[in-house]
Length: 240
Image 1 (cartoon, rainbow, N blue to C red):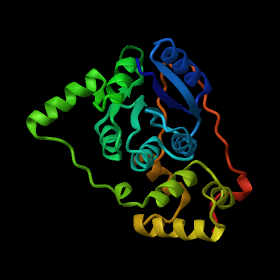
Image 2 (cartoon, one colour; image 1 turned 45 degrees about the horizontal axis):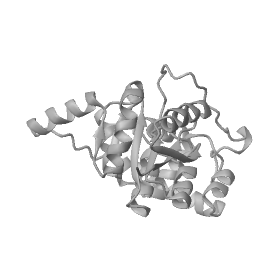
Image 3 (cartoon, rainbow, N blue to C red; image 1 turned 90 degrees about the vertical axis):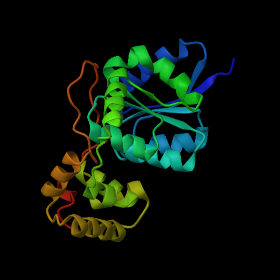
């Protein structure tokens, strides 16, 4: 029996530990790596080349949708399963368009996760039953939502920059995270502000949250806390 090699990506250590225990107890799965943010998920996927990446949608540094898009583009043989607390059409549509093979709700993951991973490894899609029922209804009615938002018009790098700005990182920190110059960060910031017609950091942050570029995590029954890395208040992106 082939062992399915899985990479687990979630920004909460306790969640990663729980997922690892669940998967490795299945007998046919091996967790070959973990990632605590979106950038690390992409790097580890490239390094380890797993069969399946189990990816949290709300991730720091690079959100799950962008991480899924990069993994799907760079590693077409690797399947991406999104694990999320969100069930709305906007998040689902973005995940599928990014190349995710399936989408699981955290509240039902314990029942569906193993089957979803096995199906994904075979090349089949898998969605949590409530989502699958809604999709079937939409397809029957030919009423699939098709949203065209400014978020979809941003380049991948602009999306990364706006997420990091919204998460409170300074120009210097963003430059270090993306391995570019501070001047380049300023150019990206100005370009996306011009494109969105938003010229204040507070408004840009609100846009990032409302458009789904940055997730505002709902309270869930998962006993976890988030460990962010705030920027120095004196060095936030209030100036180029």
